[in-house]
Image 1 (cartoon, rainbow, N blue to C red):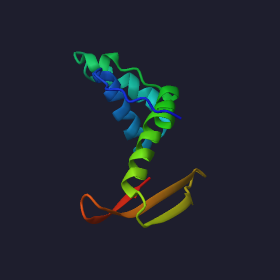
Image 2: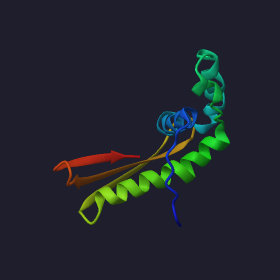
Image 3: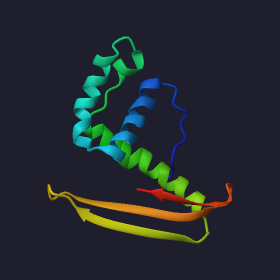
Image 4: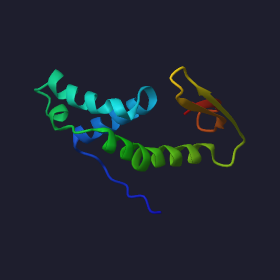
Length: 119
């Protein structure tokens, strides 16, 4: 699969990606429908927020097909052929939702230190 490198000049597109990363780390894609509608109301003078259109379908696709592969390439390039440790933990909360945490510990040559990356 060939990945197209594109420079983004539209500020609202960058904001959509930032919100997608935030939702992936802290929330559920189901909640992005409401957040995407609230942000332009909070700052109606901001053209970047007014132009932003992010709902759960677009958020899920950005996460799966744009940001996910980009982070994967970055991590694979960073780890390279060095040794690494992979720790995975699965849990179920009181609402019976399952969640998996992944931690990769490896030596980062550029910084000369061991780093942890959590997903």
